[in-house]
Amino acid sequence: MARRTASALATLSAMVTASVLMAAPANADLVMYCVGTGGAVTVPSDLYVPPGESCSLQGTTITGNVRVAKDANLIIKGGTVNGEVQVAANAYFDSVDTRVDGDVTLAAGGFGMYLRNTDTARIVTQPKGSQPVEGFLFVEAGSKVDGNINAQVGEVSVTDSEVTGNLSTNGAYFTDVKNVFVDGTLSVLNNANGSVVCSSAVQGKATFAGNQGGVQLGPNGGLDSCASGGYFARDVAISNTTGRSTLDDNIINGQLQLTANNPVTEVAANNKIRGGIAGESVAPTAARALAAPEREGTAAERAAARSAAANDAAAAKGAARLG
Image 1: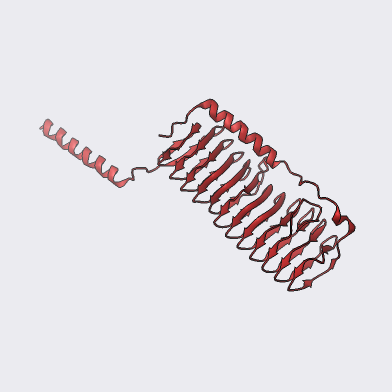
Image 2: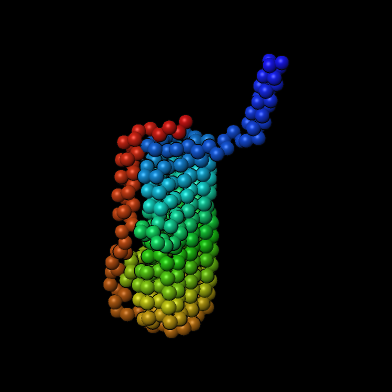
């Protein structure tokens, strides 16, 4: 009797175990921790960089999502992420020659994100809030954002890239857009040090409102060096600017709308504004011929230092166990 009972219990246990295994996917809740360096392997799960650690990858494919924890670093070159990337407070994400199929998000207080020749879905940087770290977003060197960019903190620089959706910033330190194709709208609101847009094309309406430090569309504006003006397929609205606002060498297919800018917006004669100008404007001042200084900012230097330190820390840990 005891044998029969034991046999029945064993059978029941095996059936329950089998049913549990069949009900759960093979990779359910599987997360690979990355501390150290990794190469051309496929990670068949989510990837997690623990707090305060560094992960440096080259040629790695990650089939799931990526989370970079507080104070951590992820450096990836020539990689693929089939999911999304989430970057926590004081964490850093540096990507070169990489594809990210999902969204890329910098949390409040995140250190920053530097993307070069990287394709992503939507990019979001959240407001700093009460966090001590002022983050940044650099998108450069042939990157493509298949969706919107919504940035609400720090230095925002988009250069030599494409945005298939809208590009919007609110409460950033500055927003600079150079040699970029924006297939949607461009909105720069309440930036502490203004905005520079040059050598770019914007298919939707362009709005600049409540910015300090000025707005420069095209060269000769005094904020930063600029090779040429831009093309705006719809209206351009500049309002409530404190600091010099200038337009030089631009084509605007819609109307230029100017409201309550102090000083009054300077519009050069070489602009082609097909919808006319609504609001007050003046001819450029003599100062427009002066060479513009380099844009003030520290994010590029901070990113370089953080990246170098992260690579050193990852190398010191040795090969990460990704297999």
